[in-house]
Length: 315
Image (tube, rainbow, N blue to C red; front, side):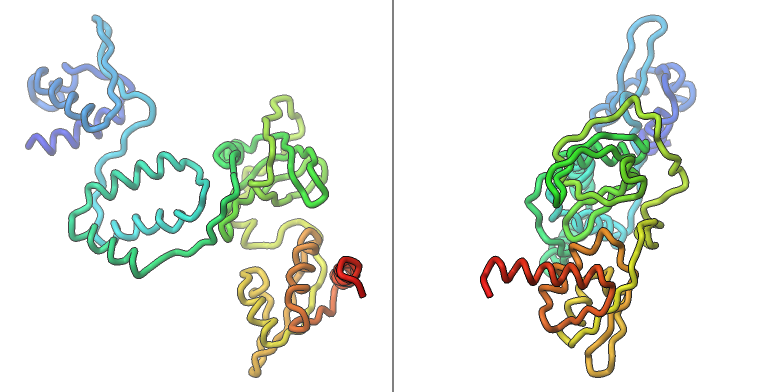
């Protein structure tokens, strides 16, 4: 067995054991104890977090997380991995941001020169564009952990009505258009709600919570792909060509579009009640390119918006 092969198999071996001695490894690999000690020293210099325990009952163990074994990538796989991470670079905050940057640096460092050159050329011609947001998202990493554990937390949330305290059971986090959102069960309203993570001003766990719900079979993918439990209203909007183009820019609205041969269209969708303030602003910005027919709650919101605008700028 060559030295390089032995080092790879040695790294695989130490990752599967909580504790081991140089003598045990020497016997397993058929080399001297001194050779194994040199190999372990090389692994430590390469970044494997080994800890030596002195004494008769001592030995070695791997600290913290285990190291992954080497993985062979084709050139296309390597490029795909690099750009998968690069697609997130416009997010100011990311879970595990430090670790992600470190992993990308290591990954790129060991790529062949030809693959690095291909990546540089692709970077000049190809981009995953996400709007750059300068909003602080201080509780993002904590929320990811709380979602995995389905932890009940208390938060101070900056809503449209002002700052308010909420008790939530955080369930899932997702990103959309450069912003981060957390889906949670609101203990006060007894339903699933979505919150902007950057609007959370304070966050603390509630260790004494006794009203934790069972969402063990819930997934963020199913939630985003299907309607939530929130009450919905049937929405219908007649659209001019410009209104159709506006609705096509929004993934949610695009699902309900029916477009005629002349470019005009109709939008028909179940409208969650919590969406009404946002939809009012959206169609108000469309002007005469959109004519809302239903629901009455949306029409009332648009009328109130028009009245408010008239009061601000005069008749």
